[in-house]
Image (cartoon, rainbow, N blue to C red; front, side):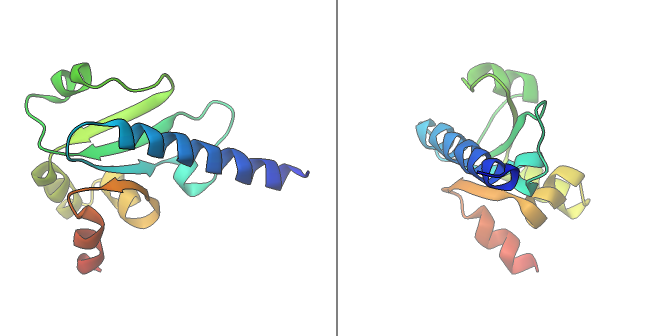
Length: 118
């Protein structure tokens, strides 16, 4: 097996792992993989970047304290209004989600919302 095949298999395993994490959440959520694993340019030190969009309350730190996510994950918990506002301001996180994000779970229809914007 060559290096390209190994990288493809590794990326697919990370997407499956992130999908399992998203599926384990016991609330309505739209979850997206972004960053190097979504683009395919990950390396040994890459973390797994996941954007969660839900009916969160409190500030980002309070939200993160309530979530139980695996080691090596960088989780970004947003409300839909925050996401929509950040997207309108062309925030890099949202622009990356729009251009290369991998949908892990979409209870809120965020993918359809983004598609309609194109």
